[in-house]
Image (cartoon, rainbow, N blue to C red; front, side, top):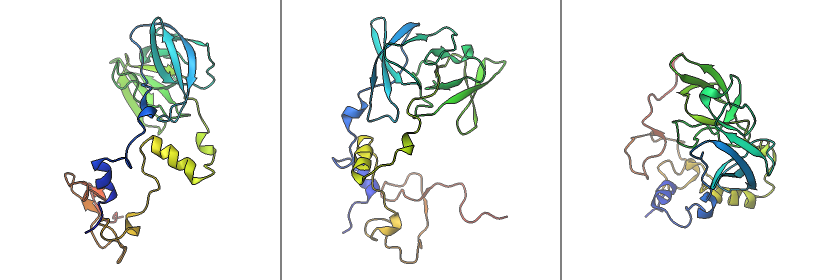
Length: 233
């Protein structure tokens, strides 16, 4: 009898495939209301690729991704239309060509897009219906509600990928904090009992297409692809 394949084991859940709960204690979001907030602390979070900032607005505390050049004790403005790094403003009040990050997909959701270190999007266009065009890093345009908020500037931590991992242990702990599977191995390298593509004899004799509602052990390969085979010229 074969072992439970990796995708099945991860779906079942165990100590081997469990996220470090303490990594997810900081919840990023925007507060209700406007005003002047103060940066009271810079934090490292294992669950995020960028450093975080702890902000105080009145009696409420909230967390946001750090922007490039932030310092402790700095003040940021929530609301208004002041185009200064770190300010949290509605898209309709941000000038064209401004770099922004942690953008709300729907008004009030606290920010869902552009949250990795060193990343930023650009405010691109205003439409007559009140929608705002945002140019994403992949150069695709996204139309959003003008009431959606975003932070001015670029996410801190640019150049993170330039620092090499000097040993395998560093990668192990980085992956474990985010519940990522590491090291990954090719399905063809496994034994036949461990994976539908296992053994490698014949080099992929079985179909790579899998049904969308297939169980975890069989949901490998192409999931309900639109087309398969070579492209005709």
